[in-house]
Length: 287
Image 1 (spheres, helix red, strand yellow):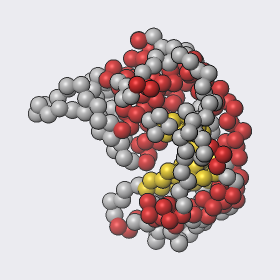
Image 2 (cartoon, helix red, strand yellow; image 1 turned 90 degrees about the vertical axis):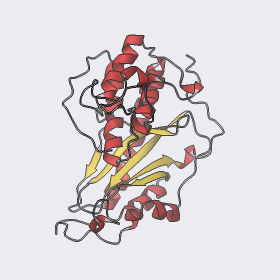
Image 3 (tube, one colour; image 1 turned 30 degrees about the vertical axis):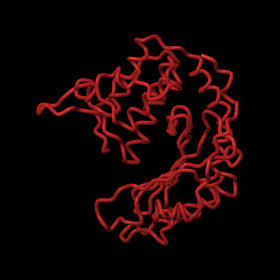
Image 4 (spheres, one colour; image 1 turned 135 degrees about the vertical axis):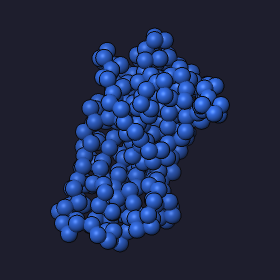
């Protein structure tokens, strides 16, 4: 596979979201105070203030989502996720671009979190890098200084060369069929207790949705699996006890998608390093 075009810019342009767009998609970003009932030690710092500080450092918001709520009390305070990209990457996007992923809520249920992310324009999907590669930065709301959160984004810039090298290594690492299947098996178990309980065979996760994703290198395979696992909609004929065709459902929850993405990145890194995949404890993730 030709890896020489990893830094070749395309004519695909990114679009920064203005404040009106952010407000319409995730009003909780602009909360004027915390949800009623949070601890008295809670220091309220609106996410909008952090967004403006990151903009001053040339981090542009490009994607946002807000957690669904089950009680009206949390409306306008719930968890939200914003992905940022450097302004220099907005005019000509490469095949992949590093992003800053910010998570927060104003209901006391989530600390400020900064993650490293990777946006792949071919599938418009965003991976979140596992903690083993980039230490997630978390800030407690008690005594929080918003300037510290903003300045911490600069640590991601120091991490960029190592992340770029890791992606290149994944692009150069060609997988044997058994290795691809091993990756898919462990990826399925990020969502389902066992492979047998999943709605599809692991090999179905390897299905390419477009010609650009037909490759056997670790990078392409990981992204192919990630899209099928997150976006769902794939089936291979398995049926439940009632005879209904089963398929992978799309994930909608912020926590679920971040957890799956980080887990998948970790699986790929261990495969790259020739490590044995750990036995996973059974987990249940909301969709």
